[in-house]
Length: 505
Image 1 (cartoon, rainbow, N blue to C red):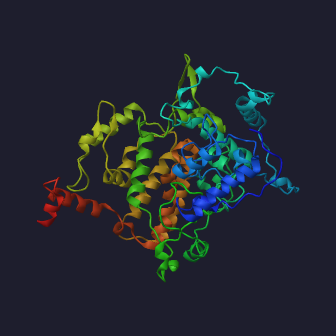
Image 2 (image 1 turned 90 degrees about the vertical axis):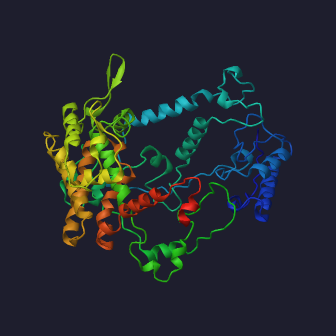
Image 3 (image 1 turned 180 degrees about the vertical axis):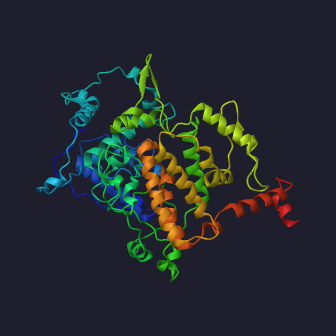
């Protein structure tokens, strides 16, 4: 398909996010068809279909009337923002050249640059010199079934290929993570480093020794300050231009702003003056964090964050060489990590659970949760993790990590933090001290654990002290009383098929 050289003005594309079947959407589809005809010329008879079903990846190009009907039946693909297959020229970023100061120049690794070059060479090197090719070099019978049109007239897409093409487009165009984002973060950088906590920026002391360390962290120093929380008035002003169109919309509309909708609660006159408008669910944050931490310590098969892909990430980022995968007899094995609990220590933990005696009502029956065959704890609930994190975790690690005292001290500080956080009375001065200890503990975890450990729940722990400083004790905001009451109501329901009868009684 060869495009004509004359320039045609691209129509407005805001109609793509309007409800299907609306007058604005129908007029927009007609403008797309007219733009395609004018930009490609009358000689072109076959076109790619940009509907939600085909998404420009159909094996056979269609006529323009067929494309028009397909769009009306299956909607327009809103992710197709630049109509490069229908006559629109790709966007080129205009960069103003300027001289940077010497301290802003980054020394890139030549080896990593060569690997990126080899990646593009492997992906696109085979198409060089094939501009005039009229026939496929490969046998079409060897194509995978995922790339061949099925007999029902549909098209089964190779999702891996589609995602790879999108990532390459993000790399070439250097698209921002979202409109209005800073120049530091692009879609490609967010894909490579999905979530890099970097808790050192939450340390209040700008001269803390952890800020100057490089090899134990991501290879660079960090003297940044913690990001500032937006106030209600700032959010109110940022969402002033948000126009929400109600009705049936596309599943994933193209969002022009990260704040596309204003909460209806801002209609309340006092809402924008509230400092904490939505509090964090501390119960589930504590449960997920303790699950990840204890599962990694105990080398749990399903809950550990230390596995083969996590070790490969370390090698890719050139961090912690002692934890890289090692080959033995042609197989990759995990070298022992300093945060692993040995088999004998896991046995002691499970036997302690079996013989543990606590006051009545303190926790559930932990004897049934300990398995002496696999030396693992199974079936722990949210309250079990709460008891484990608040009081039992320091006891279990008392004789563990003898050569790694910072790790053991970090676990103790976190356990003390959750104990102070969930107490009935909170001292604000003590809470500020605990906030510093939590940030320092997360930094210690960053020194030991692989990046896969730092999921969003690990990061949210840093903000719990600040939230408790504003809202007061967490004891009166926990979900445990409601969970117990729901359990009581479920027991009252005797007939599961006719619940309304039980409610009436």
